Structures are given as C-alpha cells and as structure tokens.
Amino acid sequence: MAERIQKLLASAGIASRREAERMIEAKRVSVNGDIVKLGDKAEITDTVRLDGKVVKLHHRPDSKHRVLAYYKPEGQICSRSDPEGRPTIFDNLPRMQSGRWIAVGRLDINTSGLILLTTDGDLANRLMHPSSEVEREYAVRVLGEVTESMKRALRKGVELEDGKASFNSISDGGGEGANHWYHVTLNEGRNREVRRLWESQEVRVSRLQRVRYGPITLKRGIRSGEWEELMRTDINALRNVVGLPPVDDSAEVKKLAKQIKFGTSTKKPQAAKASPYKKRK
Image (spheres, rainbow, N blue to C red):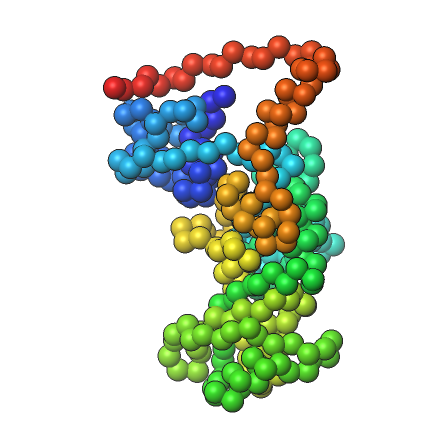
C-alpha cells in the first residue's frame, strides 16, 4: 500500500517525519529517479533515494509492538493530562485508532531528552521494572568544582533518603569554567536520582538530558519535541535486553494463514495498487 514518503523515511529510521518533510521540500528525495514533492506517496518496493543514495525501506511493526523514541523538551510533563494545563509529552504523539501510548518511565519537567513510548504493555513493564536493570545514560552540566574523590564516592555509592545509589560510570563531557559537562550511566530510574546524587556532593545540576535508554540512543537530527518510530531491529534489541522473544516478521502472515486454513477468514485479498512512479531501468 502506498504511503506518504516522509512516513516511509521516518519508518526507515532516516529522520523524524518533520525532518523528512524538510528534506523533501529541499528536493533531496527522489522515487525511481523522479524528484518528489511534499504529499507524494510511494510503495515500499519503490527505489527511494536521499541525496542520490538508496534508502532501505522497512515495513512498520504491527500496532501491538510499536515503539517511539521521543525527544522531550524541558517544560513538558510525562502525565497524560495536567490540572495546571502544562504541556505533556502526549500532546505531540501520533494519534491511533485503537490502543494507546505507554510511557516507559518518566523524566521530570526540567529534564530533557530521550523517552520511549510503546503500545506493548509487557515490554513497557519489563523495561521499567528494577529487576531488568536497563542502563540509562545522561548528559549532565554541573555547576561547581568536581574532584576525583567526589567521582569515586558517586561510583562507590552514597546514601540518599530512599536508599543507597551510585553511578556505573562517569566520563568527562567537556566545558569550561564553573559549568562542566559529564556523561553518567546508572541502572535505576528513581525520582530525580541523577540530580540528587550530584547534590549529595554539594554541586548543582544546571542541565540534564537523557541520551540513551538501554540500546536505544537519542539520534542526531531529531529536534526537541519530535519523535521517530523504531524499526523491528531496534524493537527486538529492546526485547532482548528484558528477556522477551523477538517480534516475528511473519507473525501476521502466519495468523492470516491459520484463519484461512480453519475457514474463519471471509475477506478476499486485495490486489496491490500500482505505484504512481515508473521503475527506471
């Protein structure tokens, strides 16, 4: 079935849909040799090129296993609604005819960066459960002097009001003067844990951004407030981390075959519509 080209590019993991639209408007995208315009559609079997290079297209995962990587801006909350009328991450997500998006954990209102959302409740629960110990990575801008003894203490563990906590690793992220960037990793998602760990050393976090959740990294090119849909390979990488079996590409085909075998399918298969673009030899 033909789909809008920006949707195909987003599904292929090339860029967010908004960024793909900008690429099309800049005349960087062609289908079977023809430059396309915004609103044009293509088949997954067509040859799509970006800046002259062939883009490998993928089918989107079935609706049960969809996952979005959303770049949360500061100032948004992770609740579905807010009595104070503050913007939420759900305001910017694609609408669905059935089901709903489930946020994998939360980021506080002053934290930006990667947050995963999925239609798969089992996957979401496993990713959030403490026993899964899925590693998170944050970029942190710290105001104040950080000594080697502070770093050792943060790696060894410090007592917070809700128990002992520590970073798996701390690496230098650059910066000059009082504000310096660090990258830290940890396997928990307790409330404001990264901030509280640094505050235990009497330094203040002036900026905080999550850049990775398990195997999924916030991609360059995606802008604050935008999202991209993960492909089956990335979804299966997430499922592997929490001990779930991979999503089978042929699951829907097997289901249909089973229905036909037992006479429960009454729909006739639809003929494929021809692509509006002619293949060039």
